[in-house]
Amino acid sequence: MGKYLPVIRTAECGSLNRAAQALGYTQPSLAYIINNIESELEVKLFLRGQRGVTLTEEGTKLLTIMRQIEEMEEKLHQTARVGKNGLLRIGIFPSIASLWLPEVLRKFYEMHPDAEVKMEHLFYYLDGEQSLKEHRLDCCFFASKCPAGLEAVELWEDPYYLLVPQDSDLAQLEEVAAEEVAGKYPFIPTTESFDEGSAIWEVYQALSQSSRMDYQPQENRMAVSMVEAGLGVAVLPGLDLMDLSAGRKVKAVPLVGGLSRMVSMLCPPESERSELMEDFLDMVQATVATWEEAFRAREIEPEAQ
Image 1: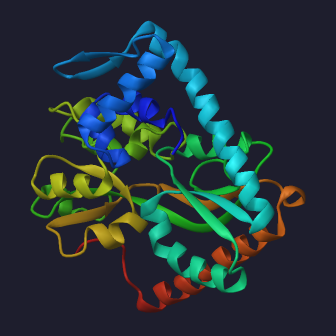
Image 2 (image 1 turned 135 degrees about the vertical axis):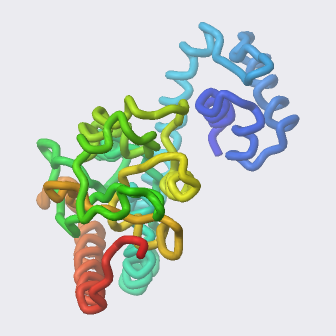
């Protein structure tokens, strides 16, 4: 862990308690570390209040430099590890990667037992794109339009569904248009709803006005629970619903027009990819193809019955 990571995480969390949990410290220990850094720099980094902590003006300026120092130290260690074993840095969305990545990694480590795989949890598709362009990732799972200068290796076309309570009138429909829902039913946004790179960004613009509560973007599992409790409706992709909605009192209704996202692996052009990355991409494609064959054979619809 880098010297300034405690400051960075505290600034991101806005709370000493949440930052301490994320870093594996106790709150007093984290406060002690930050106090030492403030003493060393002879500047106050945070203002403490009842609702958390906020950066001071000086802290805001120094945070940018601290991030740069952390990134350079990470690159230093990564370069050292690459020279020894080989390192592959992958950006993941757990809801997508959990279906295929464990089997991919099992095969990958069999072929490259000395390799190291570093996985970074992404929140937005644009985060993955930016990380690749800045060479902080080698490849990442992706579900948006392929940006210029990069290549998207297509894996699976994943349809979106409107998730509704099982006893809702909407549950009786064979398909539904966003216009039928807008302004009539409370909408529960997920993180993907706020991602300008996602296929449901425009749908969210139409539905967001119909929230009666001030919902922050919800993790998909939480969104399913809220829908089940009758608090509103949500738009979720089929891959997520396979695991999240099984046995729940919800119904996934197809969207009119077959709105979907193309799940892919975003990576540099073939001429810039290492042998390690090529092997990884081949294994991802093979694993998804095998999974798709089994999925089609079972003829399972990705919705709660």
